[in-house]
Length: 445
Image (cartoon, rainbow, N blue to C red; front, side):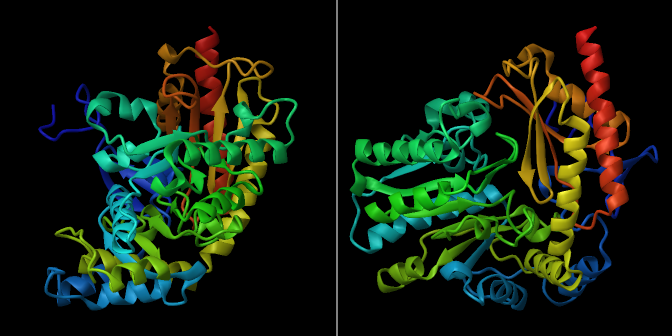
């Protein structure tokens, strides 16, 4: 057994020794298609020479300088690329080492903003059930992933409150139109503001497209415009978590560009650095920064490795490659192909209840019966079995259980690198389908 603490303490995972393009290779020489980019991370695939060169060049110049004393060229340049054009009014960037850290920073900055502008009574956050914002205690408190929260519930913050996600496949009533369902969700958020006291709410937090917990669940038209109106009416902030769905994953650089709103604070991570270095961060609206600047003049938060020179150099190169190689266009084109292939393969499948997603970010939800939407027994660990069977056949996908309530429901995500070709998309869906059918045949038997 390994001395390294792995996710499972009962067995060691295979050893990855090399990556090239959309492929990973293990110690036995097996080639695995990275069909989910890890956890929707490897947006450029593996081993891109321009990113590797940028990391080496930065190491030759400067590996580390503490931000209490210095800034560095790579961090300044990355901030210019991200918010120099002030998208949606976002004018400043703060870089850390993960999505969890980014969510912590967003939570703290939002609270400090209201202290600075003279509204210390704002102490509550509203987020959504079946969401995920990270694994640190603050981020886990914000998230609504019941399975991940359960062991730590007694030590999670009580400042976070949860409303329903936008999950029409299961939660929209048969007698509701899309617009009526959206109106009901917006009314639920308004009611939660009123229950807590509208002037005590700091922010509403949501994943623009819900990631691993709910499986690539996109909001219906008008949903984010509705919740933004509630926030604006009561003077609260809108925080959008795009750790998984942002930085091109959904076909636009920011997923919120397709929703008709822009956030006050946005969290970014996975596609920011593409896995080449650990990096995350927040993008902040001008008015929030101005509130802090006119008050204490400082952000009362920090990390040893924030704005790390090498991490920022890697992320800068990733963003430059995305622009130079027109990868957003490829995401849109290959995303349409992935949607088409998934629909062809699973649109009438007796055990696939829903196919949902956007760009190169798609999930299928498994059901025992399509008509009733009855789920499989959680004891079967269906999603894990699909992962293992796909891996045996040469494909890495990203499964999750507890889709509905933290215990019941299964789904699996495909999130290929942005460089994927049509032939590779077809191969991913073919292997994915074969693995699913093999597991379901086993289960039925």
